[in-house]
Length: 303
Image (tube, rainbow, N blue to C red):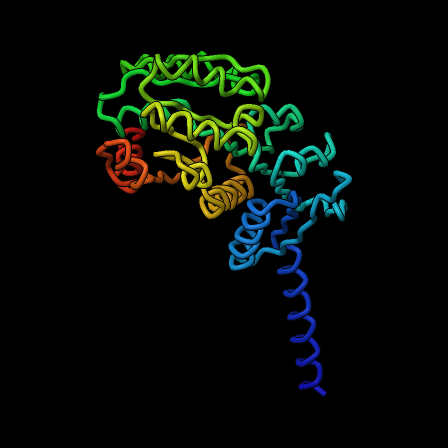
């Protein structure tokens, strides 16, 4: 009888412990776009959090712009991957904590105002671009050009200031329509030694990239771009953050917020990659450091 009573108490204690552990189990809800980069980033975040004992669920933003499932518990931490995913979240979600990633600074108008939200933007910092131009070309190319669409107009003053601080000049040529990209490029290239390609869907898209790269190559002007695909297509250098690097920062931010430590409302990419197209560099007669060397020099410059 006593033995049975003890077994019952033990079972009751274990059950209570299980309930307590489950109640304390951290939970995250990922809402993502249907893009390869969002899918890969989500998979990496889920794998990392799962190893840490988190309960993670996922919703995909469908063709109609609505997530496949919108319900979440009040203590669930939210992750929005992509601008469309961010836009689907309700403007008021109580005290929920959330992290957005794979978004541009311009998309943050859709972001609820809360000290429990943090966004990791895709935009690399202006000083990082200026440092890259300075370090890669070792002062040989002091004048850079930028095809400026509406997408980057607000960031231009900061970019120019960061370039000027490093004794570099950034020259702009405005573009108001996709069919004006090549004519604008023809006007810009005689005035610059290197072309800086920053994300802008009107300026850099499937209809313009090949013509832009061919025109700059014929003019002997190297292109410094923002993505691995641009690098593979013919840019001489690219600065970008991979899905693995973005997911690491997402997880770090979630853990920081869960511990009650505030995070910046807007975070630049903490981790980044520098790629060098050695074939194009050689064709243009440019002696360049390796991507790994440039990355280490950039990191040192930011410390």
